[in-house]
Image 1 (cartoon, each protein chain N blue to C red):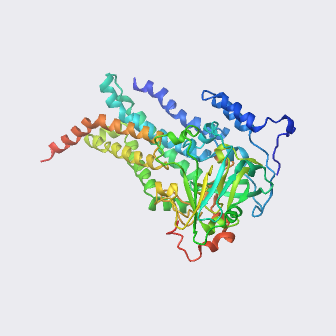
Image 2 (image 1 turned 180 degrees about the vertical axis):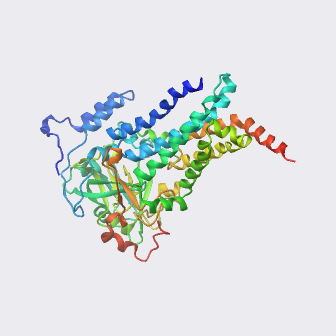
Image 3 (image 1 turned 90 degrees about the horizontal axis):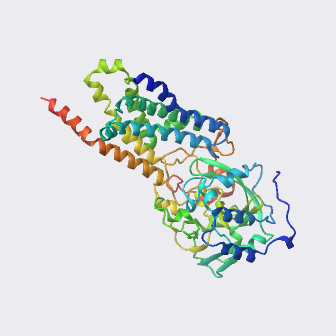
Length: 314
Length: 198
């Protein structure tokens, strides 16, 4: 796969991060968002990533679609809002906290994680609940690795995720319309979280995550609808009971806790049997393809739901 | 006089559709062009329906004869609603009859839109001088279906978003405003009908 990479400047030419961050602060509140957007581009770092498992045979969607077509209501409700209104968001420095029912609570420096050589590439299908799909080359680490380091207590059954609240940097959070109470929250069963497919992504296409894709760290659960992939995560807590999730709170009849991709269980307003494939820009060139059970990851995850009624637990 | 207006205004009303098709083929509708295309067509249908209903109240306000544009705007609303449905079936579902049938039998969101279109169909077919003469008083009664179409289209439009947002709030307020402004007309229309009964 050919991906264009910018030539890397010598490390002596790179402005130290703290200098460039403080310089940006001096620009003050009146700074044009264009300036901030440019600074954001400058901070997209190449990652030391290596190919991981489960990526076989998938051709990634062109990058411009993956970084230009996003659901990230913190930055606005339209698909192009995140790319145009996330320039003021400062993803670094960032601490990810893992707490709750664990023996060793963690405070993870995400800036350091970005430099680690543990990062692996996973090319996954991404199926949005709105019946469109992409293929995205994520870079990240399995969530299981971090959870194991925290040593979950035996009573822990669920994992709750919490995103960030920064209305000054995220214009969608001060909008009166969405009806969402921030922060965005998500949850998984502990066995789902420990599944080797479940990833905490810090990058796409070999570079650190752009703001609109959930910088600096986000969840990727490829057999579930995209909204389960909570972005810009600040807190992970292990619990003994099922945590609330944002879309389920908003419309419980439409979005369940599990949200597994399932062509046999329709959304009340549209079919989930098939999906529009993102990647063609022309009207008459758009393809539609059948949606796969568990988004094609049944071999890895079907056992998690054996004996469960997936119509009721949608 | 009406004829001269029509020569200019019908093609003008078709411009948004032409523009959307050109944008779609040039790759200017973004990453999910089919979705933008079908939603935009639906929104244009709703806009023309709102304009059509707003003509009479606005005429009372400014005194300029606007009623002659009712047929134009009504027919354009119908035309865009048909294109909206066609885009859904042809470009989005790509003729997947199974999905479409389930939509029609299971999903209030789709059913409301279809019923709104069904209400507009007889109105479009009778939007000509011949039918007006032929149907006489029933023509007026028949064309009250437009209120049903507008309300159902409004609900359908609201349901097309995952949450309430600026766009749906704006258009639903406009619908409410137009219906409110027409309330005296609607009221007197029904009262007259009642008075005729023995």
